[in-house]
Length: 183
Image (cartoon, rainbow, N blue to C red):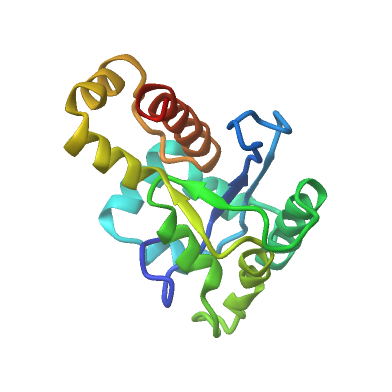
């Protein structure tokens, strides 16, 4: 995303990995796109995004991407429907995933008149519930601080803040909490 405001910022990268109820991937490859983004939107990013997306290469990839937002939204929805054909059964999950949900639900035109609602079909297909791994992490620090420290020391990796890496990290983290706390 170019920032954290779904009214003024944009999705510039999106990835999907689908798991079963045991957190096993049903498709190892997943779905990943960098969205074509105009330079003006990227120039309006805040300092954190400029630094992080510049360092990771995402800014340049967004400029060079051949994939329009409309195309990406349609392809992502098709991918989800391929693996989760029944509406309202797939659950959006990840770290701080409420922010992703806000962007996917956003309606109305952006600064160029592009309708943001193109992403909302994805949320319409998914269940209304979400699994926010960050919530589990916060509870772990409060209720099982030894487990939280063990995760940080043994499992946690420095985030690249790239979509596919973040999802893989969230799955690994949730598996750790499941195996450590939810026995």
